[in-house]
Structure formats: structure tokens, C-alpha cells
Image (spheres, helix red, strand yellow):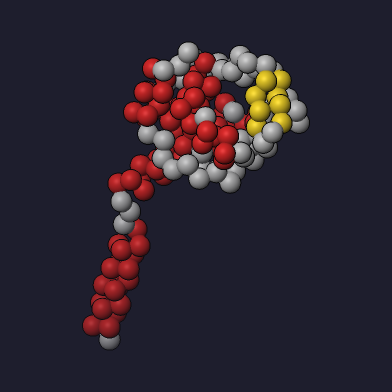
Length: 141
């Protein structure tokens, strides 16, 4: 009886260990995504909505994967320095207004929030690492 219990526990520990193993990349993605969710909730959700739906014709949705992918290199600039243009076209619709700047937001937070948005609301952009954000911010106009 004791041998069966010990064997069962050993098998259970092996199954749990195998199931909980994740690659470094998966762990990094989860750290960025989870941190990004908290940042989004604190700094972005009020305007862009809990589900990234935006606000009528005033604030664009964050659900347009094509727009996000097309403008991937500019997303960090949008977050850090805001958007001063009066029209942004998302899914063929024009949005007037400006997005406020977040000049005090460090690159790691920008990477996390873009990773979150880029993998939420129907988007699938993968990990947006901080070194990519640093490079993109260096190119902001």
C-alpha cells in the first residue's frame, strides 16, 4: 500500500513538473503581458476601453491587428510622445483628436503595454521586447 502511494505521488510530481515547465521566452512573454495589463488598466483603459473598443469616433479601438502591425515601429512613439495628428485611420475610419504623451513612461513599461495590447482584443503580435522599443523610440520624429 505504501509503495502504491509513493509511486502515485512520484508520478504526480513528475506530471506537475512537466506541465509547469515553460521556456524562458514563454516566461518573458507572460511577465511582459501581465505587467502590461496592469499598465493598460491604469493608463490606457479609461480612453481605449476595457476591451480595447475605443470611444465612438473620438478614440480609436485597439482591436485592428492590421493597423497595429502596419504601425508597429511607431507604437512606442505613440505611447511615449502621444499623437498630435488630428486624424488616424483605423479600419477605414477617421478619428479626430490627440492622444496625450506619457514622456515619463520608461521603455520597459512601454514594451509591456504594447505587448499586452498587441496580444489582446484579438491581436496576436507576440512579445515586443524592450530593446525593440528602445530602437523604435530612437527613431521617433
